[in-house]
Image (cartoon, rainbow, N blue to C red; front, side, top):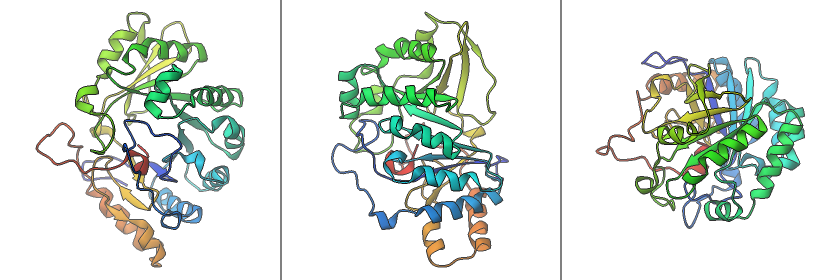
Length: 326
């Protein structure tokens, strides 16, 4: 699939559930999460069917997200089925890590290639402040188990929150060095007006974070995917890396190759754009493979050139991150 700006779309992020077992302040509303009834979410059969359609259209990488994907029963079984789809070369998963210790080995044996774990702080009190749950030890044990059972690479995603965790940037980098991981620092961005953090007050650029890291470590550019949103650096003298993801200060729309399938079956061609196509309704109405694929190709071709987060005159299309999967 090629859009009108010549970008090749090869990466599909699939949200398997809109529920989460944490309530992180930059993701979830302060009250009321608005979960859909289970019957309104795509079934595993529907996810497998649609992923097969996307694979025929050129998708090569699939990442399972949520909400929190590990709260949905049978996720390893879904991975086994997706692993058998011709054309899918890489299967990844993003998790908050709370349930990872119990499931890491089964996920690896099912065919999962790589995993990203959210970790915004190493302090128990601060974890509870950010996530509204006291589960830091579970996340740390989950990371250890993922590394132990051979999921590689294990990457750590950290949202930069000025005034909250910016004093831990070096500590989180040191954690990555000690575990030979990649830590990815991500700029805070606007999602839903009801979330508990104000991005305008709590924004910290990845370049500011990089400056802090370079007071202790030497960073050298590391080759990565051309379409990757992260600028990746090796930490000299270690097996660890730092990734910097800058959706606001230096956005990467020109090389974006990803599509997002929400848990309710809506396809989004831009994280911050509208829901472009209701694939669940098409499937459940009996639309043929050919019809569905033509509609996918049409909305993909017309996807926007870039997001509008730096254009204050454009009204934001509010969304809840737990429904989309990031």
